[in-house]
Length: 205
Image (cartoon, rainbow, N blue to C red; front, side, top):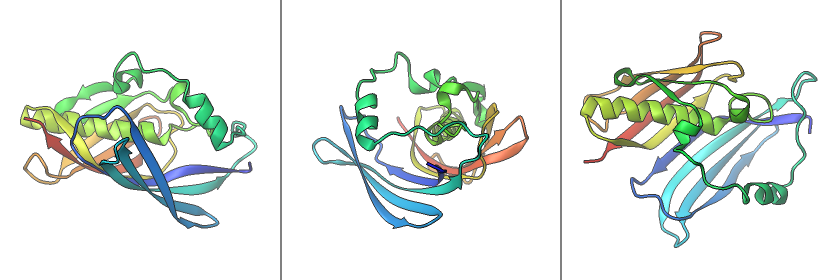
């Protein structure tokens, strides 16, 4: 209870396929140290077909007296709470409040609102990944005038984003539609890079 476990890095490799009705995720801990933990994750359909594989790292940070209280919750309690949540009324990026600034430059923005923060009071890691994904898809879609979906995503979480808003900037590392894209997430309140991402998208004809 005296430590936070915050995402330090994440990598995902996904097949470009329609979303199944259900996704099962299974994590395997590769290393559990005093200050960090690393796991691999396998995502499959309910029929056992592979959807994606990934690796994720967490760093342990001491909770300060000024931090929000840390909730006590067992895995069983968490499953019980989240299993009762219904579907979103709108696409996820709309629910998260992602605003397009300049799609041709891969510039999108997200406010750091209470509903998007984790218990430690910083922008939740999955929302950070969503922002990087949205920036890449808009950037590639605009460049090649066709819908694009991210299939590869690598993130390095450099600093917590507690104030925001966060804004992205993208740079293509090649000329083709499958060229890697570098994405920087900047906390505009402090003018500092909070996350560095490398992504690859697939254009859908």
